[in-house]
Every structure is written in C-alpha cells, then in structure tokens.
Amino acid sequence: GFRAIAGNHDFIALERWDEWRRTGVLPPADDHGAWDYVRDLREQDLEYLKGLPLTMTLPDQGTLLVHAGLVPGIALDQQSLLDMVTMRNLVLMESGGESPTYAANTGDAGDAWAKVWDGQVHCKSFPAPHDLVIFGHDAPRGLQQYSHVLGLDTNCCNGGHLSACILPGRTLVQVPALGKLRKTADGTAREWHSLWALDGNCKP
Image 1 (cartoon, rainbow, N blue to C red):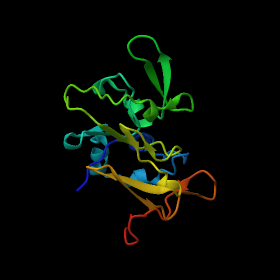
Image 2 (cartoon, rainbow, N blue to C red):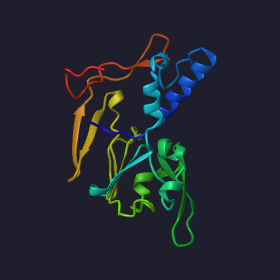
Image 3 (cartoon, rainbow, N blue to C red):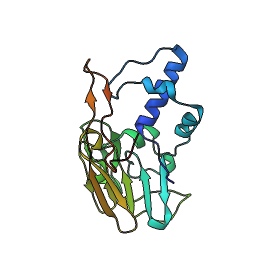
C-alpha cells in the first residue's frame, strides 16, 4: 500500500470540480492543464482528496513529510495551509531578538526555505525530534540536500527525473522520465505524455 499528503494540485482539482458542479461548465484550460478529468471524479475520489493530510510524521525515522515547506519558528499546528502547499522561499522580516522572523513567499523574493531551515519542528502532539523534513513542489531548483531537509522534486513531468528517498539511510533513487508535458494545438492546455518512467509496463 501507500500513503500520500496533500499538495497544491489536489486543492486546485477540488476547486475546479466544485466550479464545474456549480456552473455545469468546465473551467478553461490554464497553466495547470485541461480540466476534462474532473467530470470523471467519483465520490470516493473526492473523499480521498479531501482526506489527505497536510503533513505526515514517520516517528521511527525522525522524519516529517510536507508538500512545499514550513516556516521556521512556527508550531506545526499553526503553519498556514497555503504556505505548506505553495511556498518555495522565505523572506526575512525581522532579524533582531533571539531568532529571526520569516514569512513564506511563492515568488522569487527571499531564499530557498530549505536553505534557511533551522531543523526545529515544533509539534506538541509529536514531541520526538524530527531529524529530517522531506518535501517536493520546488521543481525549478531540483534536488535539494541539506542537513535537516531533503527536496525531492526533480521535475519529472517536464522531462527530468522521478526521485525517491529510502529510509532509513536516506538512500536516493532516481529514474529518468520517459517524456514530458506537451502543449495542445491551442498552446494553452497541457496533457500527460509518456510519463510512466518507473516501469515500461506501468499504465495510467
């Protein structure tokens, strides 16, 4: 079996499905792709997406999983949902006091959050130390490796690699993508094409 955490595309898919349900009209294709598939989402699919957690802890491995990132100095249960699924950078807001204060940023301003991360996850419900935070989302930067942070998004959907981390030991495994997203004739909608890189017999 497998377990998953929520990312920005899961929330976007739910928003587009809700828009289609309310209006009866499919949202137009955009940078995220075409939305024809939302008509095929079953109730069990919707419940699965709605039930995905924002983080996952692996206590035996001292590891926490999050889609995009975390802001230092903020308790896990106080982190912003939007930040956890969209952030890439941190902007320094205040440098005085015992520790600096940061704000999440989805644009180019600031530094990669993984580079700034202090290694401290504040979580009352899970007091054991988190030695490692693993995340994705930041395809432009590719593989990111720091003492307490590992970024695994290596841009598979655009022809890069699919990356995995085997625990314990933090062994990295990568396989090349067999294709990439391609634009349709109108230049806006994008569709999946030959992305099943793990096994030639794997089907969507």
